[in-house]
Amino acid sequence: MSAPDEVVHQSTRLKIMSALNALPRREMLEFVRLKAITGATDGNLGSHLTTLEKTGYVTVVKDFVGKRPRTRVRITAPGRRAFQSHVAYLRDILESEGAGA
Amino acid sequence: MSMSKDEASSALHDIEATERRSRTLFGYGLASPYLLLWGALWLIAGVVGAVSPANSGIGWGAVDIVGLLGTAYLIVRHARRCGARSDRILLLRYVGSAAVLVAFVGLTLMIFGPVKGGEITMLFTLLVAAGYAIAGCWIGLRYAVVGVALGALAVGVFVLAPAHVYLIVPFAGGGALILGGVWMRRA
Image (cartoon, rainbow over all chains, first blue to last red; front, side, top):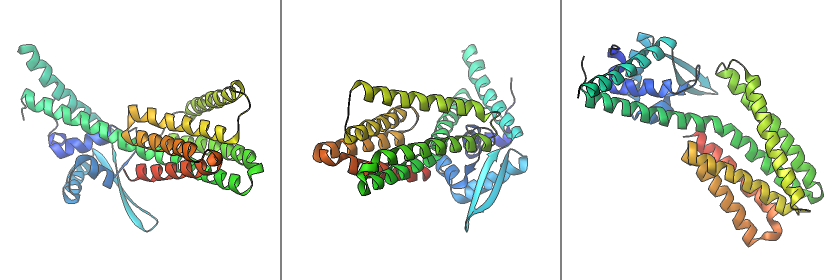
């Protein structure tokens, strides 16, 4: 059975990782779009992104478009593996309990 | 950490819904430059047709060539940005799709005999509108809204001012595509 990932498990972080995992490799999501997808507040999203970045699951890129600051987020290869492993763990729970029922 | 079957099921449901929403919004962001490009080109073709009706056909031809090349550029740019192994396959698919579209329109015009400028404009516009509406059925509601709005505008002009279709529809269509492009960019 796959192991749970303590970092990915938290609900907002799970949504962040799901949103990023759905993108093609190397693609990034803008902070505002990620906020719309997850339904998190600025502060909450920023805090969870910091946790994910420290773990090495996401990369946060900050730049400017003209004079406007822009923050974009991309999932890393270890982040994608951790997320997929966590999803496998969730599926295992359903299958193992389903088989036993 | 241990989870119940209900918690696992709920988490998987959240994951699926979030991935779907992410893909849809990402797709809107990708589609936006294409809508803005073709919207602007339709407006240019509309201006050429209004200023010099005799050169309208040349204007549309030039606009179509610029649009096809611009679309190819956007495809290659995107493929390189997301690290696609080969943009050649994407380009071949695009050229194939464009060839099918050009052949379809060409053969339709040939089969239905000599057609007026307004009828050609309506055919192109309704074809594009139908394409967006069908895309909307599969990959995102906003495509459907753009397609239906474009089709409704064109049919409205055709019913209310049939003699001026070739003048008004390019402006209405170009405007609808630009508005749709901005709307998708902000999604």
